[in-house]
Length: 196
Image (cartoon, rainbow, N blue to C red; front, top):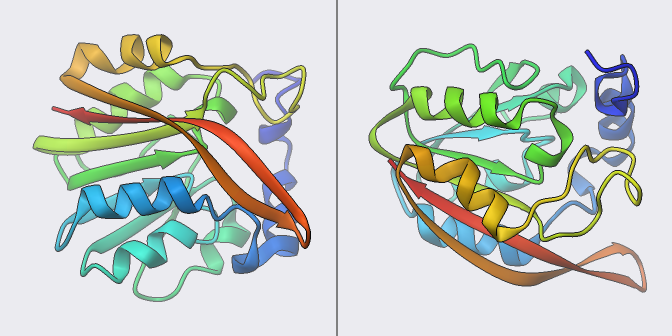
């Protein structure tokens, strides 16, 4: 464990999710809409870094069976009963290999120390022919601007991270969302799809 990784401080994310709950500003409408459309219906989906389940709840509406994994027990406790919740610290994914059709990790990889290990383990948990969707800030919000983030990503870096495991498709766009009333944030985003 790195001493300066704020994400691993005991209770850090529990405190955030206790305060924000499911009305969090972390809604990412452009990103989550694209992911829901791409995943479609009736898949078994694992969301890594699910928080209180904003995206997971939307995926349920498409008839998907959803499991959420997060470092925060407080966040997992707020998931609706239709979503299976698991408390774990990535890259640990304590689930059997070949368990899911789709895995999603949005706004997650930049927070964890071993992003490569996380991708490797996620691919093991996917069924053959499965899909992995990853979204991260596009070359912004690095550790110097956001203490929760351990690194910045570019489209080239994400492609290099994912391409050893299959075919990669990348889209870049600007996601806009409201952080507080009257405050809109425009975040450059990378959304990558890995087809194994």
